[in-house]
Length: 138
Image (cartoon, rainbow, N blue to C red):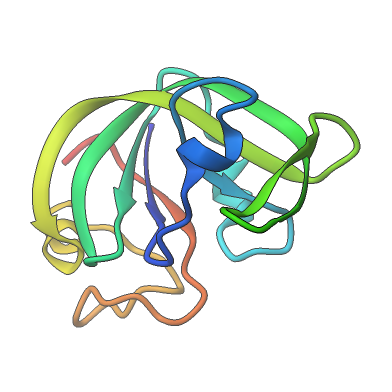
């Protein structure tokens, strides 16, 4: 399966989660939009990330998932791992497998991606977009 996630806030996943493993590229917690799609992500799936420049540059193959992470405040990164148990964050780890290099709205249009948090006419995200799955049959 394929997924599109938004990291337009520029969260430094590698830095925050490197104490767990290398290759962190996204995290989400219950209650955030897209959670129902996000929990369907499995190792082997490909996840495309919208970056701060609002572009999809890379697709990542998911190699591992860690559930239950707890964070604490950090002066350098804003947050860092406090514990790998008792929390509600789900963190994705993986490796780049596809170079995309498209504005995200062009990527949305080219892949016929539909979500309640994406404007169907323009392919632009509404506030709060985090994750959606999309068809492999394009």
